[in-house]
Length: 247
Image (tube, rainbow, N blue to C red):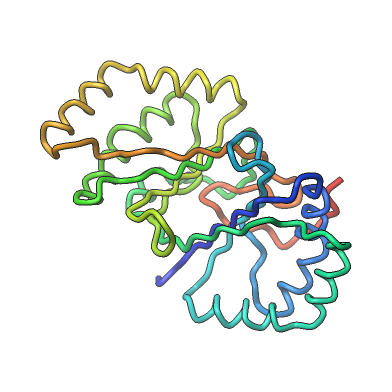
C-alpha cells in the first residue's frame, strides 16, 4: 500500500498548552471529520526536551492526494478561521509547526505486536535518529539487529519505525518507543550505551563503513494525551473513543 504517516510537532506558546489540548482534543475533531482528515493515531505533549512546551500528533494517509485534498479543504473552511481566531484570543497558541512525512520502514514488521490493538500508556519516546548518508540501508539493518532488540529487552515497546520521506535531515529514522516509566527508560539507556557487545559492534561499523552507521539522535520524551493514547502498531483509534476536553 502506498501509505504515508504524518508527524506534526507544535512548539506551543508558553502558557497555552492547555488551550491547545482543548482545541485539538475537542474543537478540531468535527472539522477534521468534515473534510476527510482521519482521526489522529495518537496525541502527545512533551515531558522533556529542548523544544518544550511541545504538542504533537500523528496521522496516517492512504496516499498524498488524500492528504493535500483533505487539508486543503480544512484550511479553506471559514469555520476553521473563526474557530482559530476565537481560541487564539489575541495571542497565537503555536510559535512554530514542524511536520515530517514518513514511510513505514521495512524493519518495523519485525517488531509489530501480534495481539489485538490496545492502548499503550506509560512514557513515550520519539527518537529522530540520523543515519549514515552513504549507507542508510545498513543503518536501518543495524537498528533492527542491534539497537531495537536491546532496548526491547530492557523494557521498551516499539510502537513504530519509519524513514523520513520529506522533511529536513534525511536520511533519518523516526522511532516511537513506549516505556513503563521514566526510571525504566533511564536505566535502559544507560545500560544500552555501556553495553560492551554494542560498543564492539560500533567499533566494527567504523572500521567497515568509515564512520558510525547511527549519527546524532534527537530525543523527545512524551506523555500520551488521554483523548488519543497510541495503540499497538499505531493502530487506528476505536470508533467508540470520542474527542474529549483535556482537563
